[in-house]
Length: 376
Image (cartoon, rainbow, N blue to C red):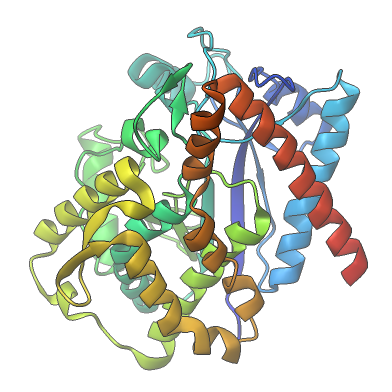
């Protein structure tokens, strides 16, 4: 079975070993021209090349990160900082990366510091438009589960938020309602309407959990972009979500099993899925949500376990089971937000908790870099 092209957009924070996030994206962009800048300089992004091979993807993520770490160290023992929101108190001043850019100006004036978050956007390549929109609809049913696995933003601005993913809870979704797109014409028509009514500033201004993407949106598309995941420290666990997404898509492409729930009222379903995402943002893997497959409520962790079991054999057939399997570690040990909170309950300090995980993050990257060298 031919594996799909995959690419990741990885947003990160960098700063001091004590956990202070610094506006470093301009310096990083000068050193690494391929890096992207967000409107504020306190988060930055690197993008992997489209690749069907998991090992090559893994290698690119880690090697880029090690190069970034080496450069940050040369700036005076600076480092990478985990989490998807800024955990410690931070300045509300906006550190523009592109002063005078109309889109950045709009973001500052409309959303202010709500957009200074980090995340992982997972792109899955599909060329056939009919398959692309079918898989877009199917994957949207699963977006709450992807968030449950990746949630890592329980702290914000020196406070315990009470959320697993404060990033997803507070991030300004735009437009307020996004329907299910069942075909390309529908998506083009809807996008052009949003641009005409100025609900969206440009084609990039579709901030939702999942969206079509491509070289000339809305007309020319070649991938689905899953945008809901918080940033995760462990690349193995990131790739377990990528492998799960690939299994869901490949299962549809092979068997064309169309979920019955997608034959119901799709606007109502869109609202339901959004509510599920919010429940997950609050309680993560322990959130009790509705599972569309059996029309029952259950904890997210139990639903994920059943989905994992359903796709184990397919992952083995595709020779990607080793990449899917770390998902079981997340179910066993909890997502990063859970781990942060367990440490916080011991230390009573957000700063001490973050310092501990900054060290862990460094060790994970170094260990995985060594693992890659051994495999070569």
